[in-house]
Image 1: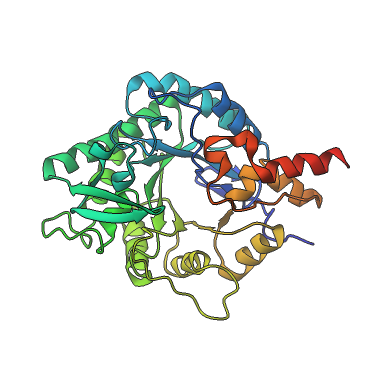
Image 2: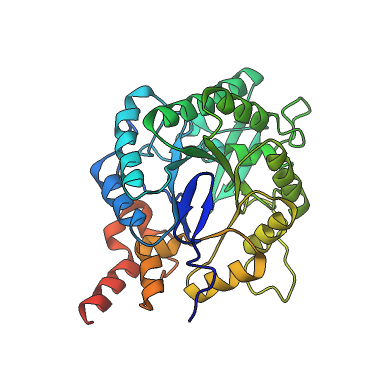
Length: 358
């Protein structure tokens, strides 16, 4: 197959990208202890990814506070002592002539410890068949979380990162604030006013230089597509540099797409965002083949495609697609092996076996 768009080089924000492939901020657990510091497995993982044919790799969700961790061994950026390790990751990106962008996250109701589970309003949700409860944040606590994000961005700049991506999807805390099904506040931190995002964006801009990249992974069904599109336009108006479009909270989202649209609602949502904003838009969800990726770029006009599971199975997915080789197969295991035991990933094991027979 001829790929007219997938491997089209482009320039943006002072950087040259060799393809339209972006590796998303896929969280890998077990490689960091409770100190949240970078370890050798992280370095090896990102060395493979930055040379795998992607134009951009976004570093995995990195917690802005101990309380905001998704797991107790999540990578962190909540204290200055973590900066030296993060500098090692930055060096790997820059050696590959790739911008270093880290995703900043707070888990909210999905926090690892029960006592740390918070939400804009009191809530109870079903996650993986289990009930999770979270208490409403006070204004003072919200202001501390805003400072946590701003301080994390300052540390990212000090570590040498070229930018950060705010995690506002998947039911994490910023996503919860944008979702009227979870945010029932009547004060200034209600869903419509987006005040927490406003304060975080303004705060980050105040502690980083003008060319520091500030993007967002945004739920475009939060909870409806119209809500998500309004948030996307608001983000552009606030001067954000890119929108990484995806799903928001899984609880009560109103997914939609035309019956003849061949890709998932998330891809359709990204297309709709791209029709409304002029900044780069990334599309993600169930992108497993080069043919799918090319069709999405051609059909939707988005700037980058974001194949997630494909890169967990094969960090050189882009190189292999370009060369006409098998990029590997994700088996969509109910619990992703890569999150807790990467060496047991069935897709990766099968790819290794097939390569031995070539």
